[in-house]
Length: 291
Figure (cartoon, rainbow, N blue to C red):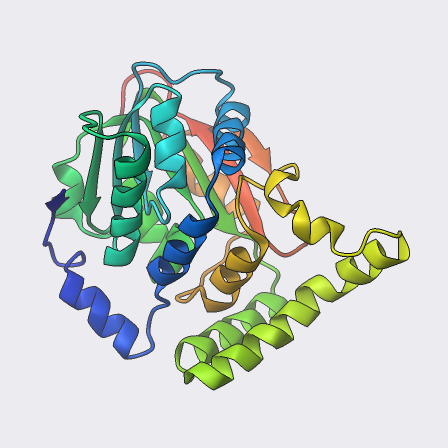
C-alpha cells in the first residue's frame, strides 16, 4: 500500500479529528462488517454496479473508489474486470480494503489501495483520470461536500462516468439529524448506545411492527442485504454508520445535477428518495473531450 501524506490525508490528522469529536470513526464500523461478508453480499454489490452503470462487465475500465469504506465495492469492481484504485481518509477503512484484497485477490496487481483524502488536491493530481469515479455516501462526510464533489468531477476521463450518492436534503429533519450525529461522536460510549437504541426504534420500529402484523417478524431486517438497493450491506452496521456519520451535509437532487451540469457532466441515472430519508444516487457522464 502506498500512503499519501498531503494536507488533508495524514493519519495523524484523522486521529486528531476523531479525538476531538469532529469525525466519526467509520473504519471501526466497517471492520466489524467484514465479519459478515460473504458471496451473497459481494454479489449484491456487483449487481448494484451493473445496474447503475448499465454494464454487465467493467473489463479494461479504470475505476476509482473515492472513500472506499469497507472495500466491498472496490472488490466488486475488480471482480467485474476493472483496474481499481481505492483510497480512504480513515486508516481503519484502508486496512479493511487491504484485508479484502488479501482474502479475495492475493498477489493482485490491478487493485491499488491508498490512504488519502478527496480534499487533498496534491494527492488527487497524482491519480490521473478514470473511466468510472465512484463515491457512494462519502462526500457529505468530508466537511466540504461541494469542494469534494468539484475535485472528483475533475478526475472523470472523457466519456467517463461519475457514480455518487449524497444524502437527501429534508430541511428541518436534516438539521435535527445533524444534531444527533454531532452528539453521538462527542458522547461517551454509554450515551452512544442510548442514542443508537433511540435511533433504532425511530427508524426500524414501524417496519418491525408491519412485519410482525404480516406474520413475518424481522423479515425486513433479515433480508436487508438482498433487498432491491440493499447493495449487500448489513442493517445494523448501516444504522451505526447513519447515526455516527459526522460531518454531515445534504443536498437536493436538483442542486447536485445543476452543479455537475455546469462542469460538463450530464445525468444518466438518478434514483431519488423523494422527500424521504437516505441517499439520492446519481450517475453522470462526460462526453467528448474533458474541459
